[in-house]
Image 1: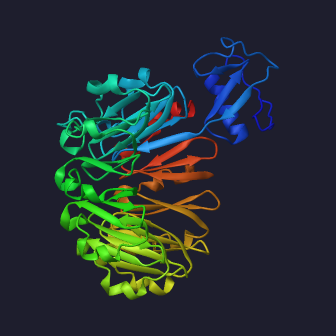
Image 2: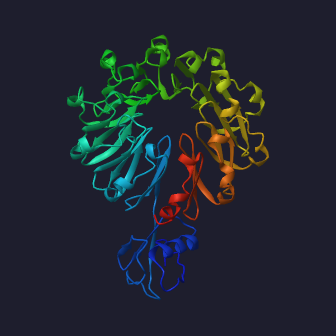
Image 3: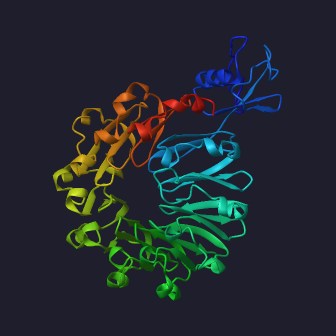
Length: 483
């Protein structure tokens, strides 16, 4: 058995073993997950086939190809597959897409998986789309899990974007197909004739904004949340990129100016700071406010004051800003010297005064809904914000050393250490990490949904934790091993 890189291993398996047994053994021997086995030019895809059935004999050579695993998440479920693989594995709350049994026969050759709050949509290698979730017994609306009404139109799909309850697919010819809750962007009939040569789509909670090849913008969905842009349409020319908050859009133009629309008090009205919005490089958002970083490192804010739309109290400190992170209600800016400036709702991360002296040489900041966690250059961590949303790391502070990365759910953090172990803290309802702590070894990366975490291990397995309805993947562990 060998990898394309030339690395080889010899394996011995019992006489009546199956393909799945051989694959698991290969993953352990090579310490490499998500492997594809190739024998005599044929990919061995069925884990239940016997080695005799696939004509694999003693002394035969296998080529082993490492595949890229892709994971997506709704608010209460996960979906994972390997690129162009024949298997899709899901777990979590059934009404959030945790059950994909109804579409397994259709989900062959998954390239990408998109998700909204309730449902998943997978792009297949032939350019078609299969969707599921979002329309179970506890959901009174189709939130995008049922694409049957537009299935014939979903051909040569290149990208899928999502609001909370709808999807929008960009086709190869630049046209767009939408489905899901009509008031959340699932109905684009009003603007369908203008959706041509679309390059990209961004979304608020319930509206879409499409960026066209000529630099113009078309929006649809909830008018109060960015679905109506007619009053700024003449200004939306030569648009470079679009950023979204929960209820508004902000478009950066080629000259660095910014045009906004949507809920006026939630970032949709930037008229009071328009003269400051020059040479803007990037824009970050809380739920109802925006913060723009200009070319010279200054910051301009607008939107709801309690959500960070007013930075006047710290404006004289906002120099040489490198990046900005946000909770739902507050912003945190990392300066060139590694210090941090915060503003917004004080108890939700907007006030970092109690830990200000510790915020030195900060390299990265992660956020839950109402708390921040900063990784320092020495690998230690500093937290601040709302107590039950992840701010209290005192219980694990002595273990937070050599931290490489941090991921966050709504109310909890998970830190990946250099030795491949994981440390969690925050609201216990969103952690449950102690249940799987002994399995969290040789972790390569962590991803998070609204309420649960999933860790990719070096041996190819996935360990998930969180509330049982969203984070328990033990019922599908054998399917994950067969990917």
